[in-house]
Image (spheres, rainbow, N blue to C red):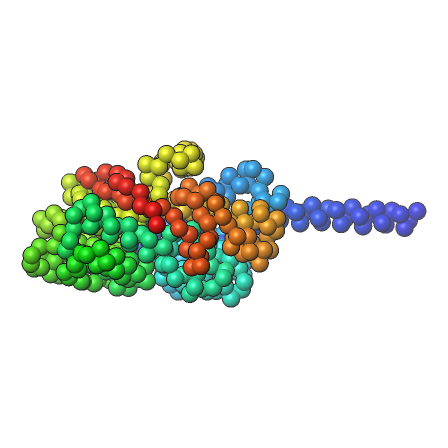
Length: 379
């Protein structure tokens, strides 16, 4: 009798431990620059990821377990980013998401690779990232080659530009790649690059670059500015204040409210940039996300980086569901096998050898501070 009771007690204890174990959270790291020059991209992106986690947990979690998002502000600083990666890895995360810029992904993702933990960037776009980091690195967005080609084609075909000056933030991998691919495509189309200039992240005075731009004869048809958000708004403001009215073209670093708020609506004109398909998109995934975001945060999504954060976490969740496992190796394998994932920012499939998803790209115009989708470019 005593043996039976003991066995029953042991069984009950085992079942109780199993129930508790089943409820242990699935920890996912979220590394974002919530302060500094990239905060206007990364803040909305983290909000998108938080919304995804809330919805997943509201639907019962994954395999009956809640998601715990461990978010850290990486402060637009590479050393802080590396420290944050080490911190969340020591906390037992099974995957990481985050960062809207290649330089900061490269400060974090290799540490995840070393530990055999998948890392999914929500917004970094350098097409070499999966090759640089390794087979645990995945991209939610398109590559810089695709988005640079999109805006180069638009400048050539729709703006009629044939002579373009190029400004590049020379401190960032993303901005250097963007300019490289823009120049490649624009010259391939028959256009001419008539001047190149550089600046650095954190610069606030662009008078020297503007003077050199004004000195180019004949006058360029447009200026391509490869910048992150903090410099995007400032360059538009200072160029327009000097009476220069030529089109300003760029990539998704310009997908920020700073392009309109920093110069003000009177000066925020004839700006065009390539970015992620989201604005003015009538797909049901987009409408639902906008409605849900507005309920959660009391405002519409600030830019396309909000749905990119949402998509990044949902990609990880989808992989866990298909793998029926929260083991990092199995999550990695399921991520690699992703085909036809219907994200808010477009369908994601890892079909290219480069592991960069081929996604459609929006070209946005800014006139009087208002954003409008001009066309969708398909690779």
